[in-house]
Length: 166
Length: 365
Image (cartoon, rainbow over all chains, first blue to last red; front, side, top):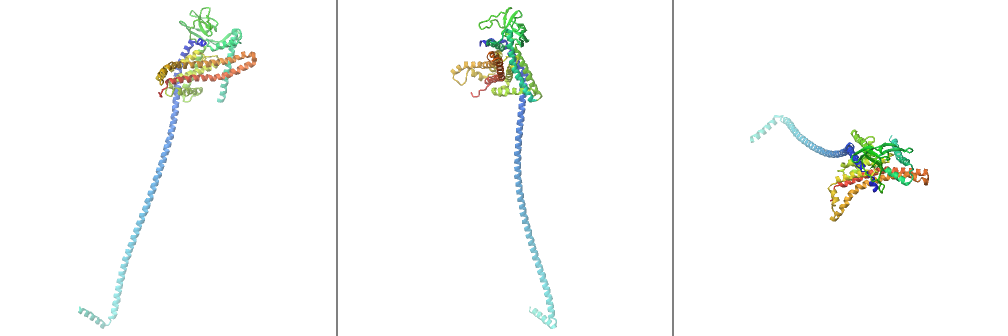
């Protein structure tokens, strides 16, 4: 201890304190501050880049999930549209069928009516024909019967007799 | 290219480590010649090691063993003794002569300057310490040269790292080595101990002190014979910085925990007060002693192992003793490289821990 105290040089102590203080001040100015600032800036930029990458990844994931959702929605919509279309076409088919059947029924009805009319017309035609033919036959028959005068007279007499009675 | 570079730098480190040991040997031999008799007793070796551990007022690189001529350069002496005295250390002639400045006489005794008379008489006390007046010695000593060298290297190195960021976010060249070290101090030392919000304010001190201690520790392992962080004045100064920073950044909670510990009965509060005040002082004290002792011990061990070459020569012969001493010294030098980093780390770590304790928010009370 005695040796240590004897070895202690106050002059060197003050010189060292002075030099060290000046060294700290100079180095702070020319080295430590710019170095630490630069390191800070570099680290910040690296952090930023990492964050940006992370965010981009998240965005992509979000976008992907959004796309998935959109796709799902589209799929659902498609299903709905298809279903509706199918229903619509079915309905249309139904309707068409109904209409067609109605039309055909009506046509059948019409045809039937026409047939009946035609039949009636034909029948009346036939009746007329039959009447004409029977008249002609009757005329011919009368003519044949009333060829002689006597017969004609008898007939007239009959008529007259009938008339007189009335 | 990178593969080729690595082994070369490793070899350079090895050469430096080994060479530094040789330089110690060289010095030992020099001393022999100056003293006129070889250093081969335990006491003389101890004295030589003591001499190395101390600061020096000259920068001696080599000494010519035959003539006792030193190759190196003198350093400026600045003393405050009722006025400023400024002269070259060559006036002392490596401690052999009395230097005169403005009518006052000074002598260098064990690398300390004492005021004396024209004949250079020193009055020694029982502990062989001179009782003469010791003027305040602000000289640019070898340690100060080391400190300045480290400071300039740090300003150049980290200044270029800072400038590099203007060109782009990734540093190039040597800055690539420095950047992870800065990040290490920030992320492993300052942030976890001080806290995310407040660490930034103390980064200037922590980074400076970390690299300062590390560089000086490494400088001490190089062949120039620096021993800066093994100098008690330097470690006291560094610990004082930590001490004052901690006290000035202490918040209300910190002072409350020292003088009026919450959550304990009143007698305990009174009992704890002096203990806590003592703790306030022992923290920086442990810092300064730890650094000083580790580095001093490292230097002493390396030099003692080299001295084995001389002390074991009688027992094992010159070849075996030299081989043993070189092998052990080399091994310890490698460990010293590790300790150089470790001590810088521990000093910074504990400093930031103390700062963290002073600025911590005590939510649980």
